[in-house]
Length: 375
Image 1 (cartoon, rainbow, N blue to C red):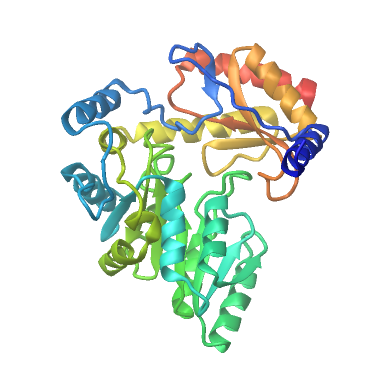
Image 2: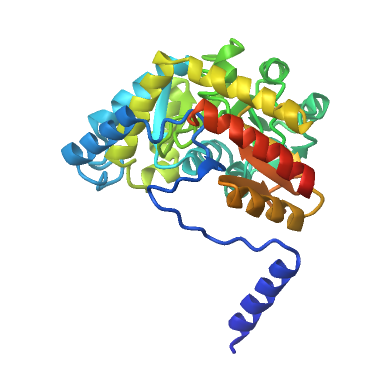
């Protein structure tokens, strides 16, 4: 074996021994398993109207955008989606990307360089972590949701003459808690800093997201990133904020400039889902009601979003519980290192409005029993 083959084999062996091996699992279009592992929070990915809109767009526009947005890859569909996203989230403008990951890479790398201080919550998503690394900005990682630590970071940045960006999520994906957005918004205004809020887990579950519901939308120093692949049941991402910021991203964000535009089907699907969310606010209410009841049944703290995490004793216990759930007809996920910020493996349960009431009641019974057995 070559040196690289030896290294790959050794790495695989270490992962297997630690219970951290990940494997791709195919599923069919007609899989009868109840999906409580994905991110389709409102059940719109398979909504008939959303699917029809995606299919019609593919037939009208083609299977792909065929070019970057700055060449010939910007369609009327993109502009329509951007306008309606901005309107719903209460923002002056929006710019759509091919993935939520790209959106987060874009906002940080287009704004930050070696003259900027990024103050990052310890629990932010990997896409934001990678964005900071690519930007080469100075970085201060603060303890999770520690407003005083953010203030200290902003004071240090001001004393050093650095512009500052604070990175948080509105709802964190592992612990499911909400960021102290009101306090952070006031703090960033005080120190002339930019607050970037990843609303991936907020939009849809909380209507237009926590930034909007807390009355913080449209402020010039608050920028929102969003995904189209969770509550909107499609694929893609967006950055929302001042029109001047949008213009800057169009001209400076490499993940936008050098990437093919979002495919027509995904664009139209997200637009149709957005309209459904506006027409049917009860979908988000269903998620919030179900997640609170399930948390109570499992004896854990209810999250602010749709993802419920149940701590397990080890990675192996989490995987065993996941397998038991699948055998009972439920597909659930599990968090294991390095995907968890605190090293604790967890069963990951996505609460969705897309599961019929009878199936949901059965799923709750199954989850309660298997957690008792494997926790």
